[in-house]
Image 1 (cartoon, helix red, strand yellow):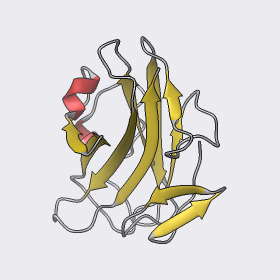
Image 2 (cartoon, rainbow, N blue to C red):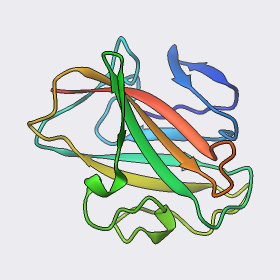
Image 3 (cartoon, rainbow, N blue to C red):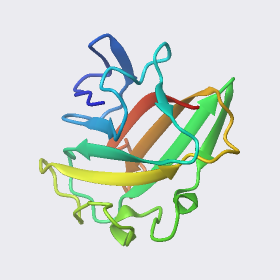
Image 4 (cartoon, one colour):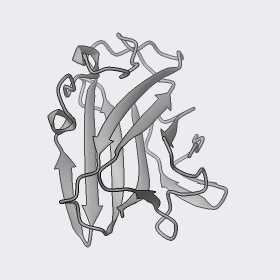
Length: 157
């Protein structure tokens, strides 16, 4: 699923994404997920027992030496942050410190230079089979607006 963004709310192929400042030229790809999936009415179906790659491709609007990654999910009115370390060995809240295979990020982040960051998310049998709004952010060390923030809908099956 690829969705290009450039305004606060973008509708592409009738897929509504929540976009935050600094998100010019950003998209999210979920490996093995149909391009048209990712909405509340058509969530990306993630099979339990498999691991999926979420690739955030973005062009930062500013330089950043110490970015941080935040992942969260919300369902049934409850929102929870997902600790990046839960994704396995090698993942850190600062993606520049990540030694996970295939994370792909080039640090420090440079303004107006395309970059990408890949997270692997294991879908375990303990996960509830409900639709979840998954949000991924890369933030700067200044605590200001996110460098990139994308949201998509997924469901464990």
